[in-house]
Length: 240
Image (cartoon, rainbow, N blue to C red; front, top):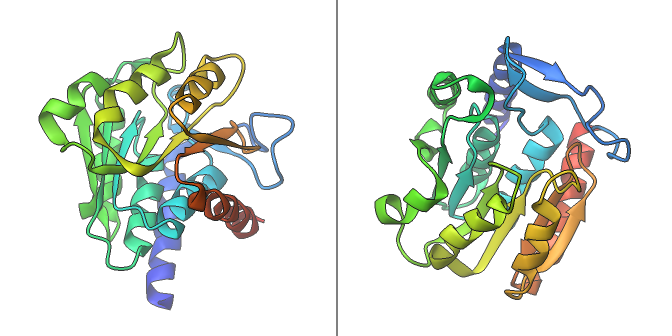
């Protein structure tokens, strides 16, 4: 166990050394202690990844709720996918994986983000759990997914004009009955809050967490509400 944790710590440090930090104490003034910095690919200013606390939160949600198959909308440069894959790696007897999708449009970095994400997979011991694809949420189903096979989605692509809700609709046929949907940048400057409220009409409960960029988690199965709250507390304690 100690050998694995040391390897994880070294991998995280190596990833951070190749990125530039922004928002040292988090993007939001009301963010919890331990928020920030968020990260960008060195020499760029977009896209911006989750911060370490948010990454740990994703990891804890996956492991504490025993998720198996995860889809991420918005690879960026693979930072959040790394944390999701770490959660899968820590899940007992998990044979799952994360499929991350990106259109390569944000920030003008083209394939650099995709290539850096691949390099993260190559440097960590659980890289086989990470799969990176170029394309939008509309293209996912016909190429990669089986109906009702996905039990967690992280939506962190285009935040404007209802696109997060469209991403959800594209994935809806592939979600299990107890699927968890996680949303980044639950902020009034974007359409994300309205999109989350629309999803709640499908029977989801909404949980909001004061992380650097504020994350929302929607759960349909009430037994996951407390584990998700516990996951955030565990993440805050780990980052303190």
